[in-house]
Length: 374
Image 1 (cartoon, one colour):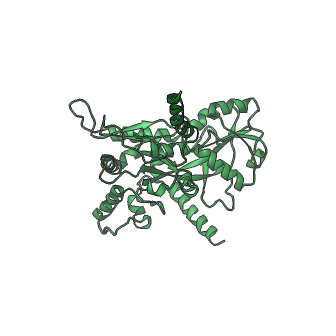
Image 2 (cartoon, rainbow, N blue to C red):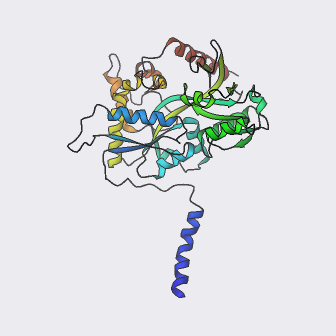
Image 3 (cartoon, rainbow, N blue to C red):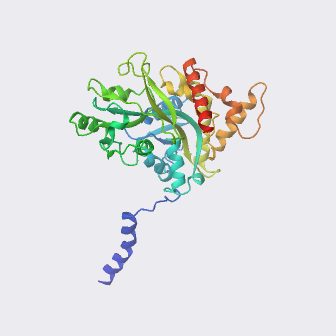
């Protein structure tokens, strides 16, 4: 009996910890060195758009490398299917084989402010800002504008997803109180066909093949999302006929908002093997970035400016050094310490931007300047 009681006493703390996990994950250990050349990146859930970009990163890095005697690569990027949103950030903080993820800047900022996962600035670094993801709301035909969603069931995706937090914030800013449901996209659309759900929201980099697949011939449509007066963390943008030719008539557009995304990584100790491997990834990713702008890749890669900075966050040092070195190699420039976006944006931005993209960017700068004077 004494032995049994002692065993129970020893198990109680473990049972309590299992039921109430600590909100701040402990520092993680590096993955076992079964393949020391493999780095992991989690790309959201199977229904999320980020997974395509993660797969494209893995393909580009793998291509063109010489293999070893057993077919091994000098650097291999292993994509992981996650759950999206806060779950992917938590995976970077805790799973040994996961080194990076793509996450919305807005979510990263809010997690830091809430301290839900502890002090992220000491545990995460960013490699580069990426592209914008647009907020899409697919609705039934009887829903013509966002105010029509008041008090109606609206799907915000899985709990802890990126779209849940952003949609909740946007609806609140617009003064529209919805009845939240949390379903997968296909399940949500079936509920919409049955009249039990009014709309479903998600984040995706336009043009998203998922949008046309979900809407198809169902009679659903995209509704406009205006920019709330106090929603300063969102970028105004439009969904055009060129983005979704089967959904948006020629010459028409759907107003919505977008949020920036960023490639973040675990802040490994500087002399660790994972730190060096992450540095090898940065060199391959940055030096071969033009390959991401091939016609077969997603057009959003054309938006990426590697030199763009994420205020109040620390960039991974090998990435900072690579950018400084690249700047110094350009005629008429010199390394000046930290790379600033204003100094290098025109030099590091991809050449594939078209006139329409530049026009929209100029409109945004004017809009932001006017808003700042209010």
